[in-house]
Amino acid sequence: MILYKTKNLNLACILIILGHELQGINKDQPRMAEFVFADTSEIQKNIEKYFNKELSLEPVNLFNNLK
Image (cartoon, rainbow, N blue to C red; front, side):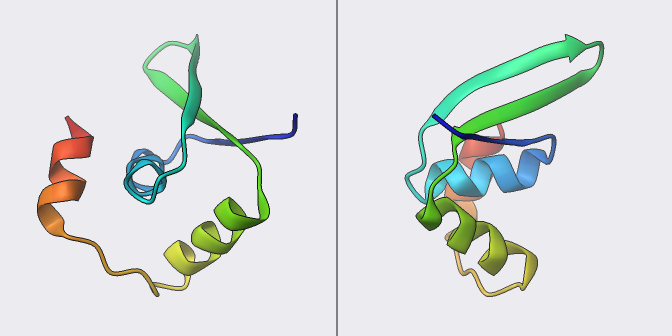
């Protein structure tokens, strides 16, 4: 399985809200986490939308997932 990894907490939370399953969290570096997801065409579309500022989410969902 090909994996997508990010250290961007906001992006990771949004991907979870959009229904992408978190495969794991790497904590190899102190004070730095890397969030791991399955790399699919759907996740790539959502990542592109995130960086192009094309997503609209309920703020409560975002704040609840940041906890």
